Length: 480
Image 1: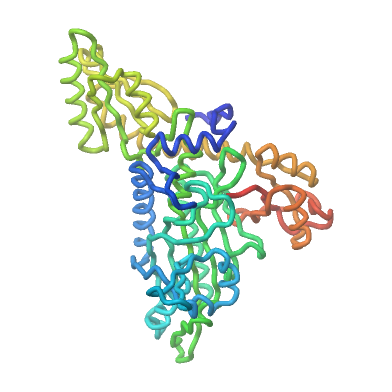
Image 2: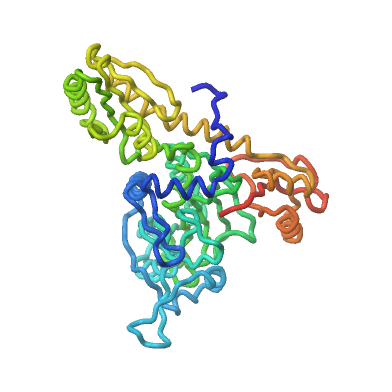
């Protein structure tokens, strides 16, 4: 992989992302949005498989970090949901409610997130510093009544995700865990080849009830950003409301310091498709691909038996280590099979004809680079191992290049508005005032997503809105 390889911007996904994406979801067996309830979709076999693999990857990392897997109820009472005033203000317009047992006037809240479901239990479980840190996670669905136009995977009303919640003895312990959570999410996304901006949200856009929030914004071909994960420092805001206290080491009482963080699996799936897909369909990283290798026999008249026999031999070798399929359908041409498995997102194809059968070789086609190479049967497994290991790195390098090409430095509101219209992400300077943030949103057509959390960036101009001294280098974009 050389540094100048980058995703071709003439691809259909850059020209008309919506049509490309919607067509791909159905044709590649990822999701069907025709379910007769708005904002709810059916995840087909390939989409479900990829999300399950992402979920497993994340869960393993969380559990290595000491998080305990749990599963909490789906519902909260109105009383508990209303306890934290800032939280309920942030979510009130998004909640689904159900009537208990058909009785009027008694409503339960379907979880939009689980603070008000988990924290009453935390107050029961935590009594002493010896009970801390408490770190739990669950993979589940949350329900939010999205008021914006719904979009399959990107903006849905039933959201598959993982959420983690922690309680700590001190703000310092909470900060250490905050950084650990950031690193866990970073690892997951980078191992999938996803490029993102790690941004600390402005105070007016932080999670309701949080001290501060940091988000992972993945790039999208249409210039919008896709928030795939967030980490929130809650301070003691929720522990004070839900009476999550512990006996300190010196005998006094203290409120627990809390974090919560979540990763949306449908949005990660969308990022994989959007960043790595091409005009044919998705290209899944090998680790999460439903089918990693497709073996395609190319028989010639009179040599069919040799080709099929050798193809089956290769299949038996490969299937021990990889999710492989031998496509030996007789009524489908090799070209049709190539197209079919590319459309299903298969990252590696093995082509076997009479020449390969005779020379005991394989023609290997890698989807990421669209390169064919000839491999001997003795070198096949070692070659596949190398490709599977390097492919996510190639995806990541290429996606980072694409992200950098989308970022434009702007000094005026008109420059920024033009950049947003041209499907770019704006990098600009901001004084920090809400008034200027509102002007930026109105005049530019994008919103302030925040400033970099992972690196320190010094302002390079006055505020893009008022011209006064800047406090932050910010990123402005449209978002899902």
